[in-house]
Every structure is written in structure tokens, then in C-alpha cells.
Length: 259
Image 1: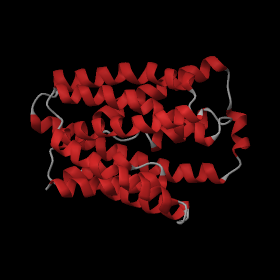
Image 2 (image 1 turned 180 degrees about the vertical axis):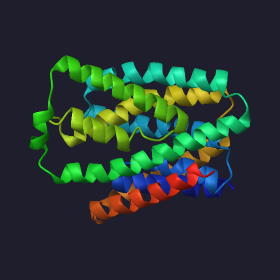
Image 3 (image 1 turned 60 degrees about the vertical axis):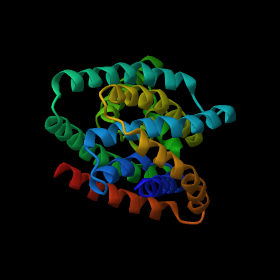
């Protein structure tokens, strides 16, 4: 069975390498629907998986200078308190397994559909001249508040579902910071996802919602998957890749809402 999890990690890495987003959005429902992993366990395991895989990506982006650390700080000011609040909600008010599964499945379904819409919106944003979005720029104080609010929303969504930090976060950052180059937006989003998923993952681990055997198997497959996906992504039109991914996410998101 460990090899099936390794193959799943490889598949998720393949998608991330080719499209840039979607790893967690595919991994968590795959663990639930294909392998029968309880929803809360799948969410907690994927959160730690994401924190470990994205840490290396954030190091690379940091060395390349493609991280806006001030924006990471603003996002974290919103996301980390929201993450802790969401974890406390789960611990204090969703104690039994049935209700916990219901909450995480519903949040996952909503998160997947939002991610699908964001994947499509991201391709449209990249296809247009981003200078047009300069008109929505605002004073620094208002943008800082909106950035923290975005972080808070992502903290709740990611803690409950393990998805949304990539696709949703990148698209909203593109709108909030239209003058920042796309590589920096991506690097900033990845760097912010590390503390967010780590805190959320450790919180789930404290509640017994992490399977460390599955976690190790996923990590074993994800690295070669990302490397191969990065090579494939340059040969397949991004519009096709994103459309296929969005279709899968909508279908799986709807399926999760019916679990």
C-alpha cells in the first residue's frame, strides 16, 4: 500500500511541477476517495506534507530574490491567528469523528471549487497586460489591511481543508499587488504557505490527525514528480493544463460535498 501512496505523491508533484498549483487540492481528496483515509486525517497529513515540500521551494525563491517578505509578514499576521482560532474551534466544538469528517469534507468541497475558479482566473490574468490592473492600486494602509484579511481567510480555509493556499492565494495577490512580477507573487505565496501549513499541520498532529507512514510515502514520490512535471509543463500549453485541472477540481469538489 505504501507504493500507492508514493505514486499519489508522484502524481501530485507532477501536477504542481507542470501547472504550479493544485498539489494539495488533488492529494487530500485522493486520500479520502481512493484510499479511504478519514477526512480529518487526510487534511492533517497533507498539511504537513505541504509544509515540508514548500519549505524547499521557499528557500530557492528566497535565494533568487523572488519573495516579497513584507507581504509574507502581512499575510502571516492574518493567517496564523486565524489558523490557531480554527484549530481551537475544531478541538473545542467538533470533538466527535462524524462531525469532524462533515466539517472537513464540506470545507474541502468549497475549497476545491474556489481553487478551480482561481486556476481559471489565474490563466486569464496572465494572458492580459497586467498594467491594466495598476488602476486598482490603493494606499499602502488599506492594502496592508486587505492583505492581512486575505491571510486570515486563507488561514481558516487551509486549516479546515488543506487547500486554497496556492491557487486562491496567488490570484488574490495578483489583484492586490498588480505591479509585483508574477515570479515574485508565486514565491511570496509559497513562502507564506510554509508557516501557515506548518502551524495548521502541527495543530492537526496534536489532535492525532496525521498518519506519518503515509506522509513519508507521499514525500518519497513528490520530488521526482515535481522534477518531471516541470519539464513537461514547458511542452504542454498552460491553458490546456489549467483547464483540465480546473475541471478535475470542480468534479472532485462536488463529490466531496456529497460525502
